Structure formats: structure tokens, C-alpha cells
Length: 135
Image (cartoon, rainbow, N blue to C red; front, side, top):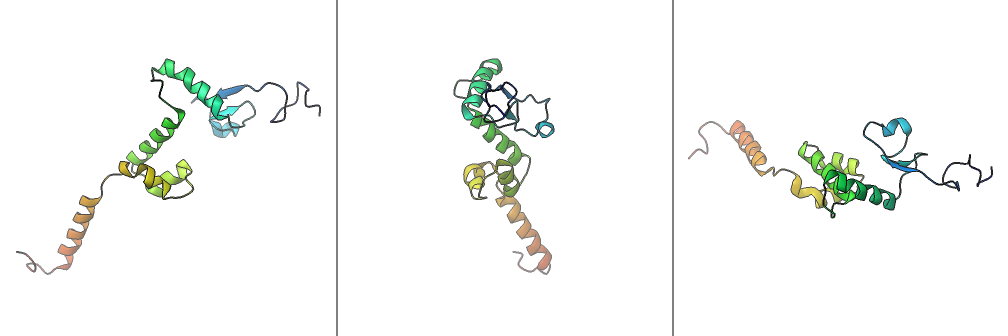
């Protein structure tokens, strides 16, 4: 196959690539590509995504310091607010280690001190004879 042929496709093609950011209407599972991919389903490069984000900033009324990576943090906060545990969030964010997830997002998980104290108190009441230990 001649690489300069207009019919050649793929990463080694000399024809210009047409990059696009997927619209919510287009399912990435149907095309096999990532949410930001070229016409062949290959992942878009960082600069391509950055240019698209810059173009969207004005339309959405976002400040110039808004970054694509901010969407990742927003996604993580939505997962945590929905009550998902560390391992699920780790898997969705594709962190190599479960330690990375609480180190980065630990402040977003609700404090469990009150519920753990209540659980211990309930167990203590159930296992203590009535009247014993009451002051």
C-alpha cells in the first residue's frame, strides 16, 4: 500500500488527520474510540484536546485558567459524592495504586467518625447487661 495514497488510513497515513471531540450523542463504545479521538478512533493528543478546550471556554463562559484536567477532578468529586468507595473511584480514574486516590481526594469523602462511634455504642449496648455500666 502506498503511504501517500489518499486511500491510506491509520497512524502512518500521510493524509491529514481530522480530529474531533465526541459529542454526548455519539457513543464511544459504538465506535470503539475514546471520547476524544480522530476519525480512526485513535486517542487525540494533548495539544488537540487543549485547542478544543480553549475553543469551548468562550462558548461555556469559563475562565482562562480552566483546564481539561479540571474535568477529571470534577468527575472524581461526582463519584465520591455519589457514595462510591475508594476502589471504585480508583478504577474509574485508572490510578495505578489505591493509595493515590485517597491521597488526592481523601478530603472529599465524608467523615465517618460519628457513624463509627454510633456503631460501637450500639454494639456495646447490645452486649452489655441492662443497667451495667450506666452511671
